Image (tube, rainbow, N blue to C red; front, side, top):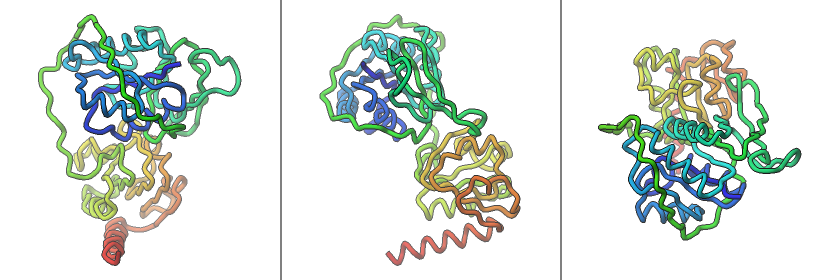
Length: 323
């Protein structure tokens, strides 16, 4: 049974979240892709190399609309491929498109999925044959979810374990005729200019600062640069205007699963922890030894981040120089 991966766009190489979606899909069945923008020959080659057997795209580029045109493409791809499972990342545009397509096909939509694999018990027909897990209540509980519709739409959090790697294919392009609905039209796009560091959503190392920085993210940035990582933040820090909102980690920001997460001057409020508690190793630096962040940290340092972080950055740079 075909597993369909929805991608808003395809670059010269797949992003980390797109690669993870392919890895999950390959463990469930033959992989096809629906793309919500124009598809070039180079993009088709990238998707085939990742394991896509078919690439579904619209006759006319739907990316000028706001989710409506893209949802039509996805619905057409679901029907043409007879897909049982549709996967995407939790990026805002993908989530909106997935929600529209799920509603149009009267299918289940399960968001923030942390694991998906074939079920080993119960009814094993159509999408009900999936064992899906997602974290709820700000990450305090993990729920097992079983879709009951013929097709299930799942949005995946970063770091979902991949169960297989699809073999490279020569992807077949299937052109879809859609209704051409727009609803709303994008009239301009302005790219977000980052600071040259990795994107917080996909970085293997994240160093985050909170209210304890008092607005000075210098030590946080120094340590992140020494580790080759991304700079993250809490909602309080972004609300104060100390750092851009695209760095925010938490329930209303990015959900991250880096190998190493360093929380500096962060108390550990539940809405922040929900976005980072699945990190590989968590290190907390705080002057308050009773801060809740220490409850989930693998290593804790009671101290001033303005002292601890620069010392750590200096030691890391010295170790790198030594080879």
